[in-house]
Length: 220
Image (cartoon, rainbow, N blue to C red; front, side):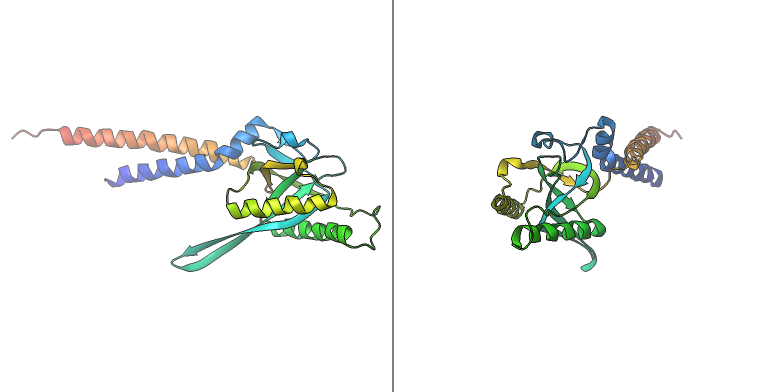
């Protein structure tokens, strides 16, 4: 493969990957559908943007560890925590929220501790519910498919039955990914698509030109 043809192929592939990476978030931004924790459980059943205020936290009931290695050496490690959250003051849905943001995790852990103490410490009056207010922005996405996760999630749902939160109140189809969906993803998607198109045009032109050169016959 000639140098120019190879370069055009790289441009095409790079653009295509960028377009794919930003596609899902771009579609969410274009549709503009947003749900918050005051919505009914039935609203948490398909892809959408998500935002609102959390006043109830349980967990983390599961943690996902992801490790990246290069040549057998660990270069980075990411931990994503999974919580069950709600806005019980105004809403009725209990939704899974996952985040790897350390500041967000610290806030959620503190809030979860407050609620745990409220439910387990007999010295805390029932009318002194924890005062929690955690703002978030993110998007809805499918739950993890691992069997271990399903087990931990069901155990959390069963545990919350002990404090009067029933299974039908949980939005089990989707979860909130606690990362803000930024308009930059639209730039990534459309910019990547344009780059892929340019690379494809140049690649086709290079291949056609190469074929013509190969088809030439020299007379002596």
